[in-house]
Length: 157
Image 1 (cartoon, rainbow, N blue to C red):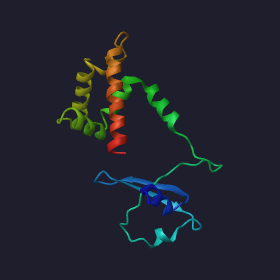
Image 2 (cartoon, one colour):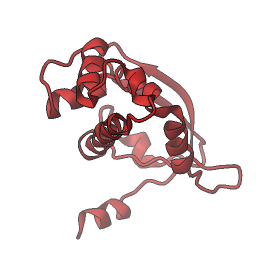
Image 3 (cartoon, rainbow, N blue to C red):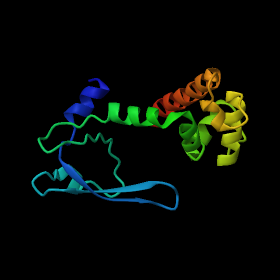
Image 4 (cartoon, rainbow, N blue to C red):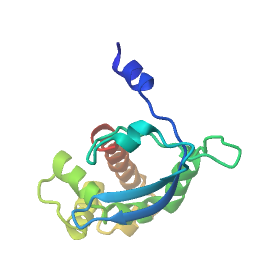
């Protein structure tokens, strides 16, 4: 039996409602859901604390259809422009990890990430990313950001 067939045969399908989200001191997230009593599966109720589950969540709308966030998220990110995108990325510890793994082992802060981005894009300031005639810098930024997004999907999704 193929792995995906085994997963499908043993899947627990239920509707949940998000009712809590906190970040622990370790950096891990604790996500809390409420399950209607009619949807509760005995396999969940009887599983020992610490039992691990693979989980797939799909937001649904009021008519029980999946909500498609792909275009909205992609467009919102694109609309920020490279200056704001680079500013946001440089604050993300996951971006620092990507830079350490792929480019430079000494990226551990927003400041070192910002300096790396400036060096990588051959600009003195991230605001130079929007200067007319500086399409090479924008292309380099997009190459770096696309690489980061691919890395997250491949390694850390």
